[in-house]
Length: 188
Ligand code: GTP
Ligand code: MG
Image (cartoon, rainbow, N blue to C red; front, side, top):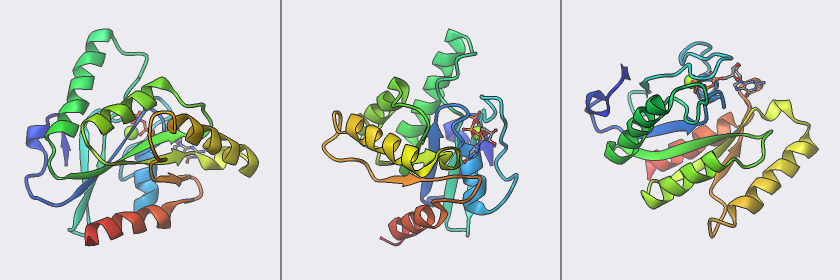
């Protein structure tokens, strides 16, 4: 189900897990990888592909939610504001939301917009984990270095490093870990 308004999202009470992050970080690709489906969530090389709140029901038991990316530079200031409202509405109103996965591209240094978004989730008391994306694009050493640098930066804001996953939609790295984690929470 795809929606432009939080009020129209599924009304049942199944737990849901949202995937959020900057445009082009790989949210839709990660959802496809997790579900082993090529085109379940629409992906694109051009940022701004996902524009709606997309609910995918899994095993009639829980929802994966694909959201539009934040921080897409090529939209107007007004569009950006409307958009921010759309995302914050989702996070503030959606009682079924169990946890958000904040996706960050493992190749980049910590970006203010991602750090701010995690702050926002913290202040809103919304549990989140981090998924580093596109791990296939770095050699193991470089990957490890970047993750360490990210941890160091996050520990300036947080008492502990949030739970995190290293993922690649190209080679399915992180798939089992992430799905096990969701299963475990659903069983609690
Ligand atoms: P928006 O919906 O625009 O916010 O983007 P998104 O975060 O959903 O990103 P999407 O999944 O559409 O992927 C963006 C681009 O990154 C596409 O060209 C993907 O093929 C590529 N991509 C995504 N994940 C990976 C990955 O793990 N490895 C590699 N090599 N490329 C990836
Ligand atoms: Mg998308």
